[in-house]
Image (cartoon, rainbow, N blue to C red; front, side, top):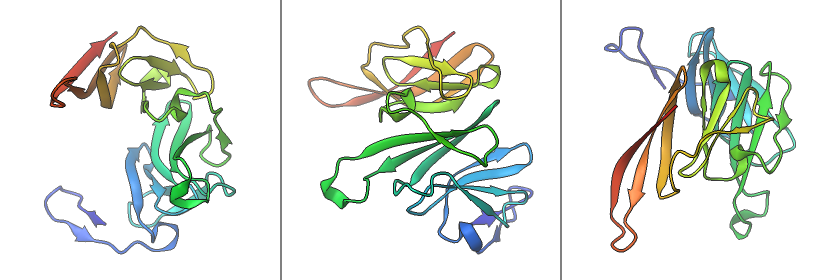
Length: 191
């Protein structure tokens, strides 16, 4: 890991403790940083300075690693993707966990937009969280109860990322040609 206070002079750091395996999806938060630990058990890592990290198991019973962390106004979501211990022969499983305090975690239901394998989730300010794919969008204050939003598209666009400001959603992705397989970047804007 490299760290710079000025964006020009980088210092190389060796991660130890729960972060020794590596960091996935680091995010800046009010009191420092959060990330998902790169390991076989989903772990949320926290740091004040980016050098020293503490870890909290998200689900000590799960063998599905975490791949993304999103910090919303009322809590955090960790998304996971992998196989349940039977190797490449098993289908990929998508899971998600939520916590209001980053200490106690609950696994979200299998029918959540966060576990369908196609939706991305982003922080949505006062609205909590936004889940969006190429055809549907949902908002939730906490990741448990979801409200459908107007359809952002017809499903022909894959969504790679999105941002929310006030009541505006800007999503970026790609649209693939049906006949020739070519792709073109697309931006979706919705209120």
